[in-house]
Amino acid sequence: MNTSDKVPNETLFQKRHHVLIVGGGSDLIPRLRAVDTNVQTSVICRPSVLKFVYEIEKNNKVLVIEEKADTQAWVEHAGALHKIDPFDSVVSFAEIDQDKAAAISESLGLDYHSSSTIEWVHNKLQMREQLRSTGVEDIPNALVMSAEEVMEFGQKWGYPLIIKPCKGRASAGVSVVYGTEDVAIKFERSNTATAPRLEPSPLIVERYLQGREYSVEAISEGGQHVILSIVEKYKEEVSKVEIGHMIPAILDSNTYTEIENHIVKVLDALNIRFGITHTEIMLTGEGPRVIETHVRAAGDDIPYLLQDSLGLDPLQYVVEQAAGESIYERLKMDVQRAKRTQKGVAIWFVHTDLEGELLNVENTEQVSQAEGVVEFIPSFELGMTLEGLKNSYSRLASIRTVAETPIQALELAKAAADQLKLQVKVHSNVGS
Image (cartoon, rainbow, N blue to C red; front, side, top):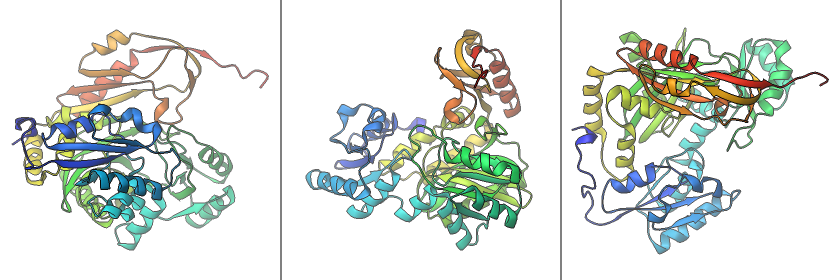
């Protein structure tokens, strides 16, 4: 049966099931409580994440811990809560502080991803080493502390290269180096990158994977993996910021199977045994190769794209699993059935290279009513300062579309984006 056929608040547990949520989760927190009348939640989070704890008053307890508290402090505070009001499980819906969730679960003897898995997923250098040691992939990479070390790597492995923070997010600090003349400026660009909730981390350099980029959305249970969809991605060439997605990806059946099989090997190598994952890959001449993976739902409204395309809500399975329900067999059947009537969907992000003050944006109403548009979400504010396309937060709006085919959906989203007219007071560099 599809999740839409389930009875809300159907009783799964004979007694209460108390879930500790580490970090935020937005609407997933009340959705988790809605799975079953006996599900109760408590939250431990840092102050900057508190705004993402929806319906805060409905939690048993909410503990806000100092922003820079170390992992041991999180473990001790969670342990104190556990003594007062014991937890049955630990979950973490957002990437930030998943390392704390792993440490807490290990301390309390509750199920969650291991600390090793979280370190492999969060630290791109460690991920590469784990994939190499398990024989899944062998992508040359190295930790670099200076432009000179990037040059040494380039001399050994050749160009182009890519530099990025080993624990980066939102495409901040990602720089492609095409030759020796690029090294100094690209290293400085990556080394000084900023984005909301981006914590400083050392830079890594890798051989630049060349090919077509995709992401693979999956949900796992007991070490078995269900591939929900392969997403075709579009990136701005210089900044590597994502500017569009399309579902389903345009692939022949053999390539689709090759990608699916490779993702299963990757998830197994990283010991990802449950939960939703978002894995970005490059389809190279040698086959699929991982760029990075995440033990959380994809951003950029990809879960909503999946719902538009397949007619099922992946996040509902996530909260049901977090509540303690087994979902694997039902999910596998639901996805197989949904793919027979899958629609083409896309999302396009409005962006500009202009730098200056945003004075006005025209034709927003026309975009909302354009053919195929399911949702238009502006993220700009008049008067804001534009700095070009530096990271995902630089994008000005998103346009989600549905059509008979993914190509049609993508073209409709782009056409709607073209209707927007930006008025920008461009900054003058005269005298600078």
